[in-house]
Length: 148
Image 1 (cartoon, rainbow, N blue to C red):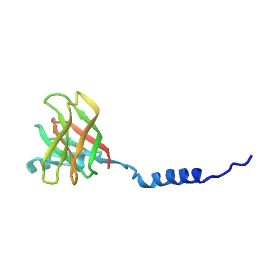
Image 2 (image 1 turned 90 degrees about the vertical axis):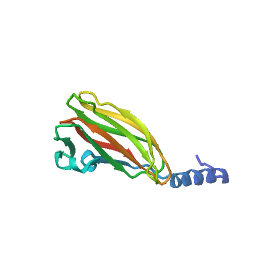
Image 3 (image 1 turned 120 degrees about the vertical axis):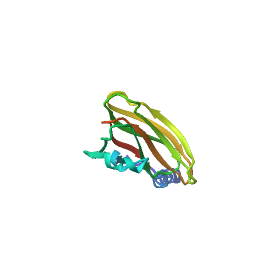
């Protein structure tokens, strides 16, 4: 059986192929918890690396920031942590503007044990994204998964 090609079928096929090249794929990325930094440099020495995670060995809560370069628009990240209990372990995702303005996205309060949560925020043009966590003593941030 022969199929007759028409200009309509060729145009439709060319249009579909063009759509594949126009839409840029979103690449999945991951950063370890240890890729961040403490809000206060005095906490640098007691926030230690533990299997690529950041581990709070300070004896008090520490504010930890993990920056991420992303394209503008809506983003969801998957954050994995460990909370040994006690204190107020809290993480918030922020969109950061070119002039340093912060737009708060989702916030989670990891309960005891291993915890995985999805957080979302809209990143402005020429902006970036940041996860900011209050990490309990002996708490960990394993990694953050996100897309460009």
